[in-house]
Image (cartoon, rainbow, N blue to C red; front, side, top):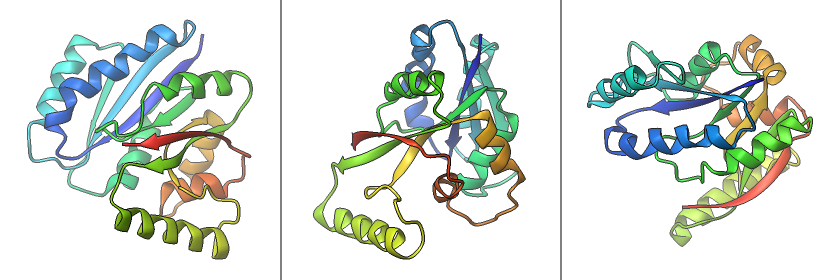
Amino acid sequence: MAIFSIVVPIYFNEPNLDDTVPALLSLEKDLGGDTLELVFVDDGSQDRSLELLREFQKAHPDNIQVVKLTRNFGSMSAILAGMHHARGDCVGMIAAHLQASHQLFIEMHDHWRRGAKAVFAVRADREEAFSQKLFSNTYYALMRRFALPGYPAGGFDFFLIDRQVVEHLKTINEKNTNLMSLVFWLGFHPTMIPYTRK
């Protein structure tokens, strides 16, 4: 039996947690007997996020870890902190507002079970204003042309990676980096699943 960890950076997410935590916990029943671990990293929130997370942790001590950072370091640092605490044989990452469909983790976990080292939920489209789409598409086009050929055209911010990839990330001493670009740069030939970001 394997452990599937999901790292969730938290920053002023008090309004989301009553929906987010139960939604993520519900994934365990579809993991084929694997154990689900949720690692919430509070990145210096000044609302009741940490208090709510502690309450969920008391109710689900076998499934929930809570990591508290001393101040706001930014989401990339929070995710890396979560990866240092995650016990999983594979580790996913998702934003606390669940703009991406958390149910995709079931399909991503299946790909990992079949040998995939990295699985990306790639934005096929996004429900955003034209100007936001234009800016994002231009950014990723430039990245593909000048920095990371083959990078997903719509980008990704929702992924699952094998423990081997996690260990590589933990040894790279980069600061102020885009973690998603770093995961792609490592070159583990990711499986890509398209989705529409809300």
